[in-house]
Image (cartoon, rainbow, N blue to C red; front, side):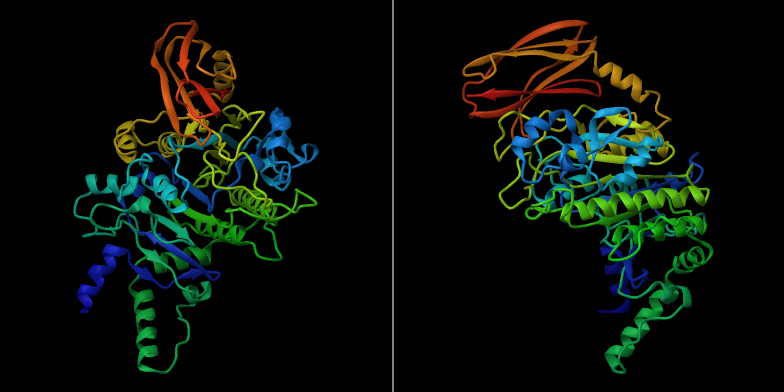
Amino acid sequence: MKRRSFFKASAAAGTVLPLTLNGMGVKTFEDSPLLQSLGRRGTDGKVLVIINLSGGNDGLNTLIPIDQYSNLSKARNNILIPEDKVLPFWNKPAAGLHPKLSGMRDLYNNGMLSAIQAVGYPNPNYSHFRSTDIWMSGSDSNESWTTGWMGRYLDGKYTGYPKGYPTTAMPDPLAIQIGQMVSLAFMGPEVNMGMAITDPTTFYNLANGTTDPTSNTPAGNELAFLRLMAQQTNQYATVIQNAAAKGSNKSTKYPTGGRQPLADQLKIVAKLISGGLKTPVYMVSLGGFDTHSEQVDSADHTIGGHATLMQQLGDAIAAFQDDIKLLGLEDRVVGMTFSEFGRRVMSNASNGTDHGAAAPMFVFGKAVQNGVIGANPTIPSTVTVNDNLPMQYDFRQVYASVLTDWFELPAAEVKVAMGGKDFNTLPIFKSNKARVEDYIDLVSRIALNKIYPNPAVDKTQISYFTESGNVKLSVFDASGQLVRILKDEWHGHGTYVVDFDVVGLRSGNYYVQLAQGEKRITEVLLVQ
C-alpha cells in the first residue's frame, strides 16, 4: 500500500498512534467542533469524565432498595448484601449503597452525588455488544445505527471532516479515552471523527520522546521508524507531554497495593486537567461486571468479585474528587458512571446474576444536585428467572441533561445530538430549574391507587391519581419489554380508572408504570 493510501485508510478507521500513560492505552479524539463547543461556549473550561462499568453492573446490589428487603431476600438470598451492612443515605433511609462504596456514600452525605434509579431504554437488549452500541449511538433498541450521536452532529454541522483538522484555535485534544477503542459515539457517516492512540509503551516514552526498543531487523527498524514518526507527527503529543509535566496529583486517597485500574486512570485524568489541558471530555473504564458466577463469597456476601469492583469504583471516585478539589478544579469537573445494562432480579445457582435491563447511574461533583432521582424499584413477592427491573428513565435523558445543564448547549443542538428526538432533562445539576426536593414532592402527587383484581385472570382495573398534564400508563412484561400503552394523553387533576384485558398474556409478573413528565411510579401485576 502506498503511503498516501495508508494514511487515507487510517483516517477513515481512526488513526492509531503509539502512546500510553503509565502503561495504559490512551486515545485522543481529534479537534471536533462539537467537543470544541463543549469546551467553550460559556462553559469556562468545563470537563466531563465518563466512567464505563463494562459488563453489565448488578444495580440491585449497588443501589439497594432497603424497603424491598423482604422480597429481595426471596429472590436473591445467595448473593444479597445483609441489610445491616448496607450504607444508607443520611436523608434516604429506604435506599443505600453497597458496603464497599463508602467513598461514594461520603460524597452523597457531603452533597456531591446524584443517583438516578433504573436507567435504561425501552425494550432492552441483553447482548453486551448490541446494548453497548445502543448506548453509544443513542438509537432505539429496534434500530441499528452505524453512526454515533456525536458523529451525526459533527457531519451535519461540519461537512468535509477530517480535511482541515485540527485547527489552530484549539491546540489540545478535545476528548481523551483511556484503555478502549474509539467509541461508536464518535462515528460519522463517512469517517470516524476520532483518532486512537494506543500501544504498550509507557508514560515516560512520551515524556522523554523515546520509543520502545525493537529488534535489529528490517521489520524491527521499520517499526521503530514508524513509532518515532508517529510521535513526531502527532500534533497532540507535545501538548499532552507538557500537560503531564506541568500537572500534579495532590490527593493522598488514591488506593495503593494490588491492581487499581480505575484509580490509575482517574489519576492520569486529574493530572492532565491540572496540567492545563483544555480537553472537555474524558472516558475511562472498569471491566469485570459480567458476574454470572461467584459474584459474592458464599460465606460472606459483602466480599467477592462484585465487592472488589465496588471497592475499586468507590475508592477511585472518592480519591479523584478529593484530588480535583485540592487542585482547585471542582467547579469545572463532573463525573458520570454508566453500564450497558443491569442484572436480573433473581440470582442464579452459581452465586451470580444474569443479563438484565435497567440499572442506576451516578453523577458526581460539586455542580450536581445531591439526591436520589426516582423511586426504589418494586420487587414482586414471587420472582421468576425472567424478572427484570423496568426502566424509570431513558439513558438519553441523562445525556440530554449533561449537554443542556452542564455544557449549556442550546436545545436545537441537543436534539440533533440525540438523533432528532427530544428527551426531557432530569434535575441532576444545580443549574437545572427544577430542584430534587420539588421533584420528589411532585412524585408524591401521582399515585397508582389500586390494581384489582391482582392476580388477574381475564381482566383487571387500574385506578390512578394524577395532576394536570400528559399522562402515560404502560405495562411491561417481566423481561422489561413494553406490552401495551393503556393511556398516553392529557389528564386533568383527579382519579381515573382504566380496564386492562390480560387474555392472551402469559402467566407471570408484569409491571404497570404511571408516568407524568419525569415522574414514575411502578406496581406489580400478577397474571395467572
